[in-house]
Amino acid sequence: MQTSGEGPPNQEGAGVADDEEVERVLDALDAVERIADPEARSRAQVQITAATRERAARWTAERAELANQMKAEGESVRGIAKRLGVKPSTVQDLLRGYKGSGKDRPRVEQEEA
Image: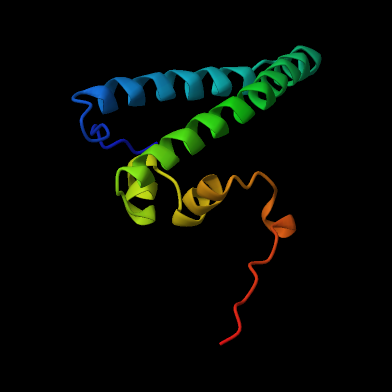
């Protein structure tokens, strides 16, 4: 994993500590994949998957709130994407409150000229 060591603006030193926490989580996931007993590994994977699903919705709502706050403060979609480490299309989805998969994304109505 490549880390820059830079935190978001106005949060001195936050990036390094955050990167270390992310590395610890990824190391723990790697350790689960190394569990020798397939049944024990499967049980651990089920627990992690369930916990991840529960958190994903909260984390998405948190990102959406942050993206809306940044937009209200005048930040561009690209600027928000860079600061949050996501694609601009993800920021657009967050700002629109869209939560579905890409294949089910509603089409944007074209205005007639």
